[in-house]
Image 1 (cartoon, one colour):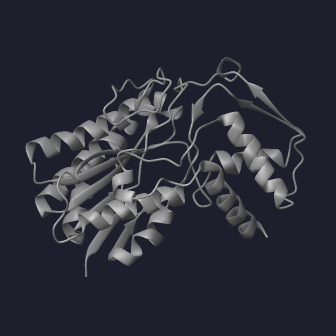
Image 2: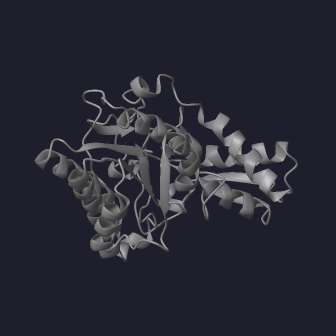
Amino acid sequence: MTRILLIGQDGQVGQELQKTLAPLGEVMSVGRSQLDLSAPEQIQRLIQQVTPRLIVNAAAYTAVDKAESEPALAHAVNAVAPEQMAKSAQALGAALIHISTDYVFDGSQSSPYLETDPTHPLGVYGESKLAGETAVQQVHAAYPDLQYAILRTAWVYGAGGKGNFAKTMLRVGAERPELRVVSDQIGTPTSASEIARAIAALAEQFLQPTRPENLSGLYHFTNSGAASWYDFAVAIIEEARALDWPLAVQQITPITTAEYPTPTRRPAYSVLSNQKIQTILQAPPPQWRQSLRQVIRELYSQKS
C-alpha cells in the first residue's frame, strides 16, 4: 500500500490532513512529541525508516511575533527542516508537499499576488518561510527528479488545533462588550479543511503511476474572496450569534494597524491568486464566508 508521511499531525491543518489523505494510502503521522524539527538528523532518520512515496510537511514555527526574538529556531524549523525533507525525499524517489505563507510578501500590491510576483518579507517569520521555499527549490534545481509542491496559504483557522483568530474572537467575544479589530490589513480567511482538501488533490496527482508534466512548483491556495481582520471578526460573531452562541460582545470597532502595534509588521494586503492551482482542483475554492459558517458550526457542536 502507498505510504504517506505526514509531519505536523497536531496542528489545525495536520488534523484535517489525516482525514483527507487517508483514502490515498497508509498515512504515517508524527507530531512534536515524536519529531524535533530543529534536528535535521532526526528528520533524515525518520524518513529513511518510513520510506514513504509522499511526504507532506504541515509543521512550522508559526509564532510570528515571537520569531523576532527566536530567529535561529524559526530558521531551523522553517528553512533547514524542509531542506532536509527535500533531500531525503529525493534520495528515496519520494515527492514532497510543503506549506508556506502569504507573509513572504510585503503587502505593497493592490491586486492578488501571483506565484511569480517578487517576494519581500517584513519580519523573521516571513524570512524563515521564504528561506524554506528557496531551500526546497534549490534541492530540486540540483536534483530535477525531485517532485515537489510548495503551497502558500494565508489567514489559516479551523476547528482543530490550539488556537486561531476565530477561536480567539469567540473566546474574547464571550467575555467583553467591545472588540477592537484591525481594519486596514486585507487578506483571505482560509479554512484548514479546505487547505487539506487542496493538498489531497495535489497528493493524488503526485501518487499517480505517471505524474503529470510540470506538476512540481509553487502554488497559491486560499478560500475565495477577501476581507479585513475586522470583516472576519464581524462575520465570526454573526455566524456564532445565528447558532445562539452565548456572547457578551455588543460592538466591534474597526481600528488601524498603528493603533495595534506588534513586534512584527504585517503585510497590509496579502490576497493570493488561486488561478494556477485551479487547473488541478478543477473548481474555485469556496468563498471564505461559506467555509467560516461550516467551521463555526463544527466548533459549536464541539461545545454543545
